[in-house]
Image (cartoon, rainbow, N blue to C red; front, side, top):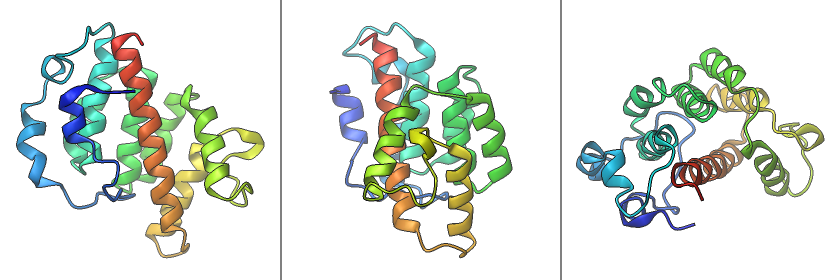
Length: 181
């Protein structure tokens, strides 16, 4: 789905993705600071403002401004808002808080697609049980990210790819909800 010119300029799918705070992409900071729901969605009719705010939170996170993302996501009292909030805490390496917010999510509609993608990324075998019985387990993924951060796992590339796919699926879902697509 096309996200309009504003997001097209801010989302570079080839950009390396961090599983921690990562270096802030200061080259786009002024664009992000000027971003509002109205400016980001100027080419669209907004039908769900919370979902639109989730997109804004997500794009801040994409560029590793986790606290700016947090300021937005913590005020969105929806499943998607909690999901962005959980990702932010996972990336700041506050793993217990990430799990708290994933419990608030309970289930999200992107989980099914994400679980299929996780299995495909692993070559068809879910040896880490991140998607047991084709059901995404966000708690297992939080644990894996923690193991990587602590040097107890060498699966950084896998975590980065899952984080990228998760971000793309959640952003796409929020965008579609925002514009009623």
